[in-house]
Every structure is written in C-alpha cells, then in structure tokens.
Image (cartoon, rainbow, N blue to C red; front, side, top):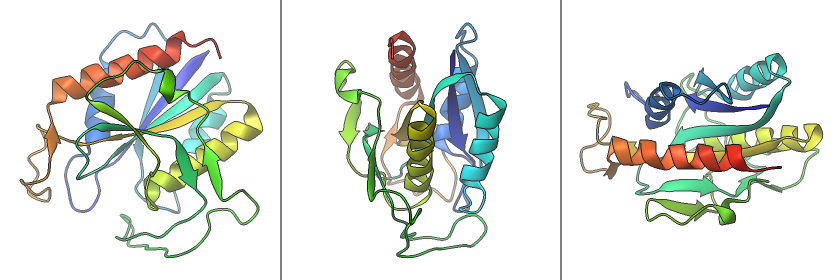
Length: 200
C-alpha cells in the first residue's frame, strides 16, 4: 500500500509555491514505489477537493494522504492536528472566489482531528504541532480529506511549509521568513519515513 502526497499550485500572483517545490524535490528520491506524488492541486475552492478526490478514486490502494501547503509568515514546518468545518477566506482564490463565514459541510462535525499521531514523531527544532490550518483552502482540503478518511478507513493529514530561500518571486515580500530548501527537504523526508514505517 502507498501514500499519496499532494501540493498546491502557486497563488496570489506568485510564480512558486513552497509545497510544490518540495513535492518535486521529494519526487526525485527513491521511495521504492511506496509514495505517489500529485500536483498541481488548484487553489480554487470549487476544484481543489474535486481534483484530489478524483486522484484518490484512481488510487483505491492508498493507505493515506498527506497534503502539503504553503504558509507565509510561519517559520517552522507545521503538522496540522485539526480541521474546522468553516470557511472564512481572507483573500480570493485563484478564480477570484472568496467565500466568507460558511460551513464546509452542513452534515458533518464542527471539528475533525487528523489520525496521524504527530506526537510520536521525533522532535525537531524545524517542526511544530499546529492547531490551526486557517480558514482558507488548506483547512478546506484537510477537512474534506479527514471526512473522506473516516468514511474509507484511511489516514490523512496536512503539513504547512514556510516560504523557502529559493523563492525570490516579486510577489513574495523579502521580509517574510524563509527556510533553507535543504533543511525543509530533510524535514519532509523524515516525516514521510515516519508515515511509511507506521503499522497502522
């Protein structure tokens, strides 16, 4: 059984996305067929979950899903523990849609917890547990993944990535914190190895 790892397309006028940069770097490693990589996930509310769900339907064998997303202002790789059944988009998506103050699913719980035991991952100064995936596309995708995972007996989670030093886009302000690419790659590799060595 394999894991599916996803990443977003660039958004907000930028030419790069840290999650996609890392996905492409991780794809270069030899995972012995244990990981499928998928990008680009559209930064569009009307399409993001539909696109990922279509990929999952093509891969009924997957054991779990780890979605990656970019988080400006964060200084560490964030392991998201919960998703809210709520959208309050502070900025428009790539199609210009900006849903505010609405539920993701009227027939589902207010909060869903990731069933990845992040607390068992070896401590690193470059990582942190997070209890807020925000209320934009990242939280939206995580909530849908967790709901799907509950229904299908799968393990799902989300990891936020800071901006990387290689990202020099004019749309990304220079004063924003950045993580060295190699440190981020090493940290994500450890996370994937942790997921692959778990028995459940």
